[in-house]
Length: 352
Image (cartoon, rainbow, N blue to C red; front, side, top):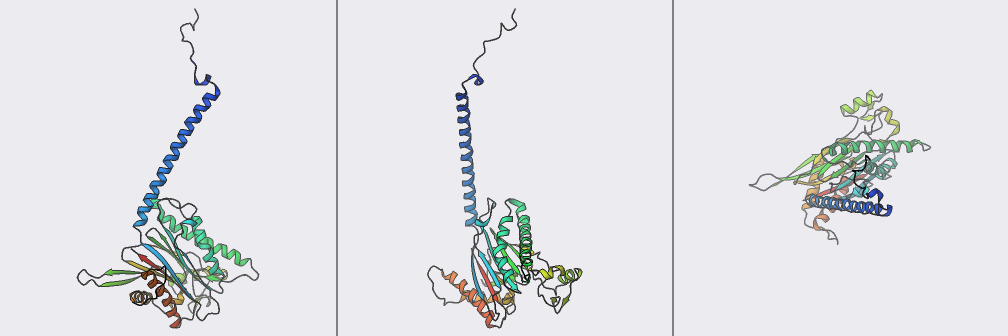
């Protein structure tokens, strides 16, 4: 007896089908899968766009204004950057972020090359290193990104400066405000400053408005105990409030000859959450703050914003005209008060 007599006749399987039919079936299935994947991707993108739109509608509206005065100096050594929308610079921005804005002031000394280099490169380094992740770790990643961008900018400038003959000895302070949705990150080196004006109603009964000035940055000069100790540990000295009796700041971009004396490029990084009471941010070099206290500068701007007479200009709202006038008048008043330094002021309005 044949062992295989009871087995059924073999049927035609896909393996025995003509190759063209088998390939066509696989191609059709693959096309269907690709179309389904594409539709899912499109749906996800639409959903993300809708979430971004909803988030953006609830965010404060920011507008930046700038005023720069050379003052009594022979050269303008300040530099500044206003990037209301920095998202186009980012290689891979986090999906759910609706806004990334960047404003920065650089106050050069020993020349204008360090401040210009920082103005041209710091935000690009920041964009390259900007985190693509989401959620709870984003805050830490952004702070690390700022630290890395400052370090990279300093290293790149020092490399370029040392390759020159004679070597460049320029240095610069750096204070930048990075706004990510409604969170404000401030990173600074040196004595340029950022301050926030918050206006709140004192009580429901009288309806009086009360302004508060909040410091967003920390100054770095050799007279501060921690800064002086670091400089001395590195083998440097502080005389007449200056590093080696010469340099006024204890942290900076550039200043290659002082880096071995404890002058560093590590910024102080702080984060603030914008509130419905926040009115504007002043970002300025020490040319302003030599003749204005932070509180005086805020009150000066508030006074200009309350003035009735303002020159009308096509394309600008009344509020925008007031902020533009406040920025220009603040810088001019600093020169009038006798600031012998360059004066650069960035005024960022916060609308709700």
